[in-house]
Length: 217
Image 1 (cartoon, rainbow, N blue to C red):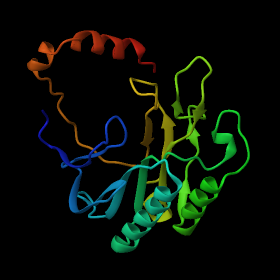
Image 2 (cartoon, rainbow, N blue to C red):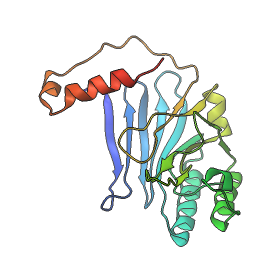
Image 3 (cartoon, rainbow, N blue to C red):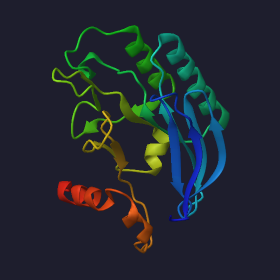
Image 4 (cartoon, helix red, strand yellow):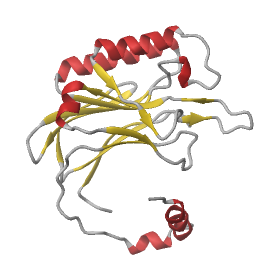
């Protein structure tokens, strides 16, 4: 285990659904506050290099219309509490536009409420590179949608410029992971660490071989 990584905040899953885990690198940021809600986990951080304070919220959105409105209220409350540059990310379980659903269709009230939340909080919805959808039911007749995304406040984007949101290859979940990358981050050289005990885990070598062979430059 690399001890410099912090793993302190999570929201437990209910059976096979939900769950949020927030991890951070203690060599880069210091956690100065935290909040765990019904649908989200939030951390207020301070950069060790420039003392810049900002917040991140990991989200697992509910499916029901009533609970989804509670989510928007929860997030708005956290924003007003800390009042710092912000980055949201996770599975919102709702799309913004009909084009984010396979087969499209009309605008729904849930889409309108999601867009209203983004507008009211002054958030930036970055374009998704590498594909249109982030979830599929993996059936023969596939149903696809974009449920996962990052949302940024304008002052967060100003401090971390050249940010891009990119879809990665599917691993095990029916969600495709998304990566927020870019910006001018200064990092010292970090040594590579390997634990011999990893070799004793069933399937570890095969998994590493699969990851290596699937990697494309």
